[in-house]
Length: 267
Image 1 (cartoon, rainbow, N blue to C red):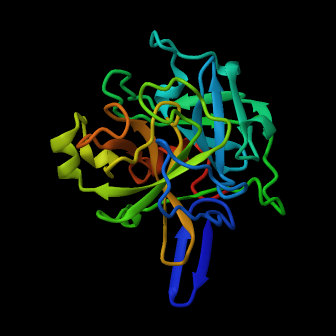
Image 2: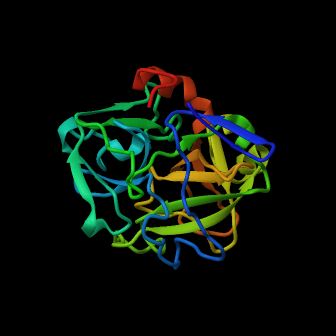
Image 3: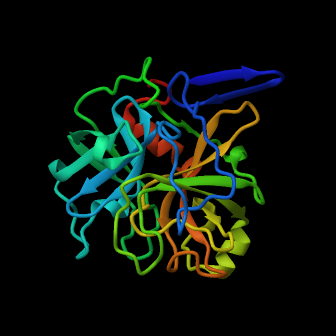
């Protein structure tokens, strides 16, 4: 487990020592028509190439990537072949990343490809990532339920489209600071099967977009450590007024993640 003390604030989060340490600075920037992230600002961020399109993901353990289940299905709803998932890591520039093919992926057994209920998956790498003494490759901590603060800010990153009609995948990683809204507000604005299993964000003119799916939504804790509270799942278009972005709630799936990565504590 990752335990860090700063002043009177102590945080314990899974799984790796020194998880969630990142020089993130997101004032006034956004993915949709936004600006680029700095190099090494998000060392836990990865890109996935399942087939011919791109998604995001996050390093949570030396050998495990967290992403969205829908990223692992093609446009016809068929599962991508296990050995067709390429993972890029170690740089915010997609052309400068190290790459490795996954050995397997695990989609939540109750994932619904129509409603995106239980939109969460794990990707296993064939080798352990070297996390020690490498500022370009670091894990993110996983959040507890108490880390989700309605009205607070969360940060989302990805290489996805800059606007809804855009079909391109960006070369440089982008970032956005979003406002977390309540479960009840989200349920009144979006069609979601179960509001307790998602986190929603709604900020005027700011949003994640196509190609950002599977990427991490993170918040800063009282100790200065960043923790992942959500996984980019779905939304109605991109930055559409009164249309929240919907993110799979990581804390709702901690037991599932523990079980499928082999341990509740080990990195």
